[in-house]
Amino acid sequence: MPFFPEPPYSHGQPPRTAVLLCNLGTPDEPTPKAVRRYLAEFLSDQRVVEIPRLLWLLILHGIILRFRPAKSAAKYASIWTPAGSPLKIWTEKQAKLLQGWLGQRNHHVKVRWAMRYGSTSIASQLDAMKGEGVTRVLVVTAYPQYSATTTASVFDAVYQWAQTCRNIPELRFVNRYHDHADYIEALAASVERHWKKNGRPDKLVMSFHGVPERTLKLGDPYHCECFKTARLLGTRLGLSKENYQVTFQSRLGRAKWLEPYTEPTLIAMGQAGVKRVDVLCPGFTSDCLETLEEINMEAREAFLNAGGKVFHYIPCLNDDPEWITALCNVTQQHLLGWNTLEEVHPQTLAASREAALAQGATN
Image 1 (cartoon, rainbow, N blue to C red):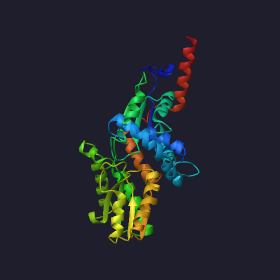
Image 2: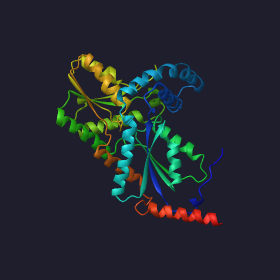
Image 3: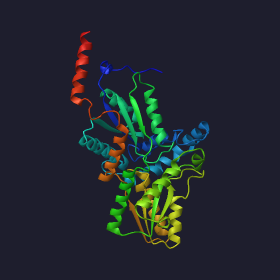
Image 4: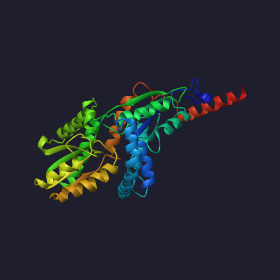
C-alpha cells in the first residue's frame, strides 16, 4: 500500500488539535441515481449487514439496488429542503456551533464535520485537517448509543484513512454518551418545552433505530444503552414505566430485529384506545429521513388509522442550545490532556509553515 508523502513542515510542528463530528450520511440529491449510489456504499459495509459477503452482494446488486432507490428517493423528496438534506444541514450547523462554543471557552481547536457514507467523506476531512497542520484528532460521532453497525463503522473509516498516512496524527474516539447527564438533560428539556406548549400525552414513545437481534446476542451493547437512556430520561421527567414505551424502528429485511417494533406498537396503542402519543427519537441527534418521514409521516398515519386521535412528534435536538452545550461538554472531557487552551494560534502556525516551506526551497 502506498503512503502519501508528508508536507515539509510536518517535522517538529507545534501541536494542533481538531475535532471531527461524524454522522451517518445522506444522498446528494433525492433522485434514484443519487440514492442508488448512497445505498450501494451504505449497504456494502459489512458492519451494517453481517451475512456472507458473496450472497449479500448478489442480493444487493441483483435485487435491492434495482428496486429500492426509486422508492427511497420519493421518501427523501418528501423531507428535502431548499438547502438540501436535513441531516446534512443539522450536522453542519452543529459543527459550526460546537466550534463557537469551544472557542468561547478558549479552546484552540478546528471543528469539521463528515459523513460515514456519501459526501463529505471522513477521509476527505482528515486529509484537509492534515493539510492544516493538525497533529491530534478527536472523533466524535452523532450516535449517543454505541453500536458496531454505526459507531464502529466510523472508526473503521478513520483506521482505513490512517493506513495511507506516513505520519499518523494522534487519534481519540468518543465511543458513547448515552448516559451523559448533559445529554439526558437536553432531551428532557426538549420534551418539557413541548409539553408546556401542548400538554402531556397518554404515552411517550421513545423510538430508537433498530438493529438485528443477533447483534445483541453477539455482544453489541446498543440494546442495553438504548434502554439506559430511556430509563434515565424517564426518571428525569418523573415518569413511571407505564407512562413511556421504548421501541425500535427502521427494520430491514426479514430477520428478527430488536423489539418491540415502533409502528406495530403504535397501531396496537391506537387499537387499545390510547388517544394521544408523543414520539421522541433519542438516538438521533439530527432530524433525518428516519425521523421526519418514517416517524412523523408513516408512523403518524399508522397510529391515526388505528384509532388514535392525536400524534405529536418531538423534534430531534438539532441546534438546541442545551444540546450544543452538552456536545461541547462531552468534547471537552475527551480533549483533556491535550492542552488545547495553550496551543499555538492558527496564524502563528501558518507563519511557521511558510517559514518551513521557504527554508525547504533554499536547501
